[in-house]
Picture 1: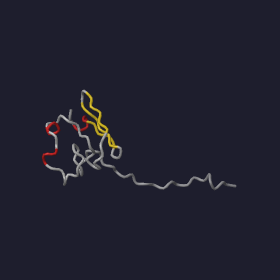
Picture 2: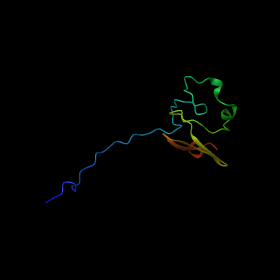
Picture 3: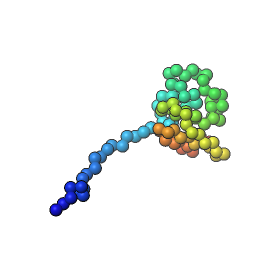
Picture 4: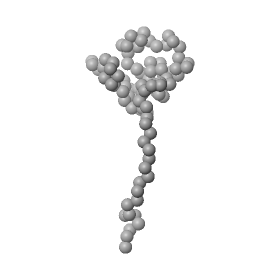
Length: 93
């Protein structure tokens, strides 16, 4: 006699959704201000960020504040919803 609970039932196959990274293009939010790009003024980006001296502080997809770690050789930033990005991945140091 077979046990109905022991029969191998095929698990449903779920398609994995591709979640864009925090800085993936196209961005909906400013990565230095957290504002929607349509609402962000041209002069809202700090001068240090325009010079490439400041890491992004906000997720470009959802506008949430990211956890940023600045290292001597670059930076890494993590959004709780969209994952992690590192300056070495972008070629920025």
